[in-house]
Length: 469
Ligand SMILES: Cc1cc2nc3c(=O)[nH]c(=O)nc-3n(C[C@H](O)[C@H](O)[C@H](O)COP(=O)(O)OP(=O)(O)OC[C@H]3O[C@@H](n4cnc5c(N)ncnc54)[C@H](O)[C@@H]3O)c2cc1C
Image 1 (tube, protein in one colour):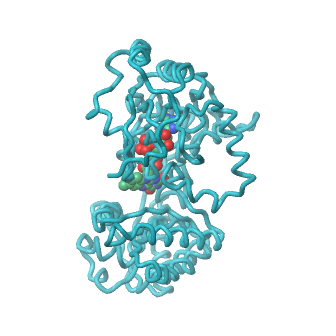
Image 2 (cartoon, protein in one colour):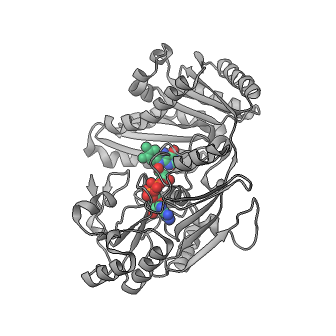
Image 3 (cartoon, protein in one colour):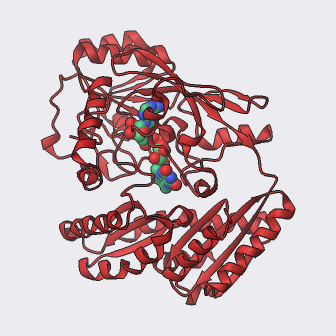
């Protein structure tokens, strides 16, 4: 665990005992944490970064959020919103100290409305809890980050989270119809609609989505639901190498099929989780594809067979259907386990989540061994093949190699941009990736984005140190 470097020491006013007292009066004694051992879990997310807040406030309603922000304006202390701290770029780490404002207690599902096919939720609801509540009414909330049983819907909206189902269903932004947020000055704003459409004024709701807690604190979400697909079918397919698997992915997508998941793992990943796969092919294959289709039972069965054929036409060594939910779950467990095993496999671990155009995935992955050799690093690649979203888990056996590895990361990101891709498909910029932002975004665009931040937050109270300096 590393702490934030001292150059990020706070330019803000410290939170003095009288300010703590005013916060306690505003939100109640039981919602304020000050003891060091209680602050520590709120000083980190899923990155290695740790920076202690001066105070944690566990709000229970929108009025408490407003009260904290009003005090922050009055006394000039920073406020960092936090969902459940599963972020992968330090977005909820309070790099300038101040208050971490935890939304975890605002976790009520206010309604799941089957007639209008919407859900209204508080931001601390865990993703999977909404999925289950919707399922009970025959409805489906598709966004499915791999962290779905531990991350919050507010965090999902703030990062525009996606997951395996993106290839067919899109990201969180596609399901957010409207929201309520508290602005950095403490004012409450509602934005967006409860309807399927709406084009009145600027789209503030979708500007706040993906803004990583820098423009407003989301206190309520209105989410679109769709009918739950009645059937699902899964297959796994093994390929001799990653480029051929990716050629199959492009072939599937360009031949008119839209699977509901297209996940992949490379040979390095298979070496780590191969013990969980009871298939002979695991041993000699160089890449693994997991494909899924959903819809009516007859169509699903036909389509999965067709996808298997396309895989075989593109060099698959083996295609295996998951005939029951038990075996299907096992295949997904493997996919979920891989990131944990990678993290524990090396002393130096840098996760990237680049996206390249689907027609260029094979070209990109073909070049990965060149980068491994040139920068003396090992790249574990897995991810959402159907979106061209490749999680590059860059590792090295020697932690002192970090500067050289970071050069390699930078070179990889430049390659992604040359291919017409983007440096982050899901994890966002937060704190740890902001040095790379100018690689992708032009100076003029950064100027405009900073101007937007200044309109929302002229005093830089909300989540400072994220996205830009
Ligand atoms: C094992 C693992 C797998 C993952 N898989 C995926 C994946 O498949 N797809 C994906 O997209 N991500 C993935 N992630 C990353 C992470 O889970 C997502 O970014 C998630 O959306 C973060 O939710 P959270 O509640 O943990 O938010 P946090 O980590 O607490 O916060 C994330 C950001 O959102 C802001 N924020 C949180 N709540 C609010 C709010 N109510 N209002 C305003 N801002 C807020 C924070 O300030 C911060 O900038 C994964 C993480 C892990 C550890």
